[in-house]
Image 1 (cartoon, rainbow, N blue to C red):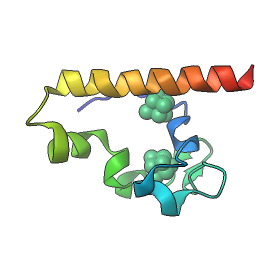
Image 2 (cartoon, rainbow, N blue to C red):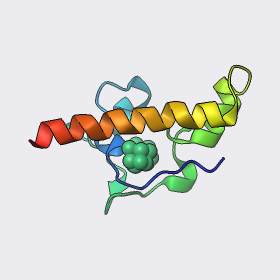
Image 3 (cartoon, helix red, strand yellow):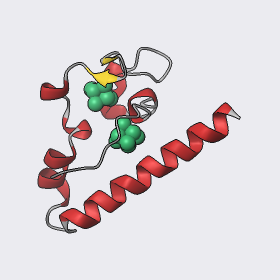
Image 4 (spheres, rainbow, N blue to C red):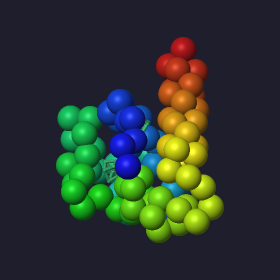
Length: 88
Ligand code: SF4
Ligand code: SF4
């Protein structure tokens, strides 16, 4: 699956409240594995951070890959909008 991530890094700076990433939160919502705005454990990142594996594990029977990508892109847009509002 080719997810069109632009590597803004925002989702990795807003992990507070995501129980699956609780142990990765350095205390301010930023993942301890985000280095130079990139995932330092990319090849072994958890399932929740891996769109292809998440799709295969939980979504392939309920939506198409394109629908899954659209759903995730909508989440990206919401995160970016929230970030814009917070920096105003
Ligand atoms: S918010 Fe979306 S575009 Fe930005 S790094 Fe995360 S997945 Fe990629
Ligand atoms: S493990 Fe990697 S992809 Fe997942 S939140 Fe942390 S830095 Fe981002």
